[in-house]
Image (cartoon, rainbow, N blue to C red; front, side):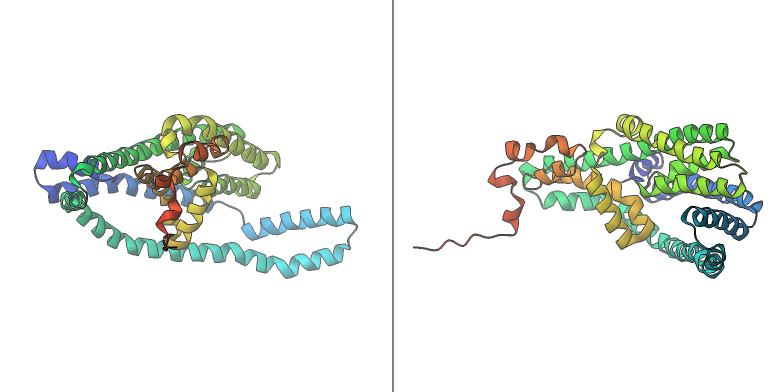
Length: 336
């Protein structure tokens, strides 16, 4: 869906579908490779001059436990012994997480070859696949299917363009705010948060936690790390209530319950890739459901602002054709 408009554009230029698909791959791959190299080089520079993380964390842990010991009147020797015994095991947690993330990333790279092949053949055979679907429909229903496929294509395009705009806006806003706070490489953190926003809730939280801990390690004051947290909360409110609704449109808005379920199922089945694809998958599913009477109530159940539309199901969908359970329940009629 995302590569199809690019492939169609070059197919009109070259009059060769195979060549057009290959050029579309190159056009899409170059910006992605540039972004990966940018974030890799910036992160390498960023973390090269960090002080010893273990020493810094040990110092912070000692200060926190000492303060708690003073407030709760605990024995200082016992507190120090607890830090010594448990700090090593605590420090193993992030490194274990990084190791598993690396292994997951390696598997993702290995699967990209397979994904590229499948995408290539889907683009190559897209006309045949479309005609196959149309042939499965009654002639009078084929117009509805064509409109649905066209709507899905527009939805995918709107999602990609909207995400690009949101990434730029968030990168500039967060980067400018971090620059005012005094965070090194502010626009690196800003655009990293913008890209992580693709994963709802989880990516946004990670985008704020990373610079927070970074400032804890390098800052001599406590106001800067907490100012980073306040900035991310403020920007997130602006993004959720002002930027996304106006840029993405209402058709892509999904209520938080289904987003969380989508993140869980996507992450369980496909890891990070599944979490990234969960929101567009839900948006496309909602559009498909709306085209069928029996599934139309489910599409409204997925919409954002559900609490304000509680009465819509009894008012508009209290009919036999809209009842999903009739697909699974058969009524046996017996002669009396």
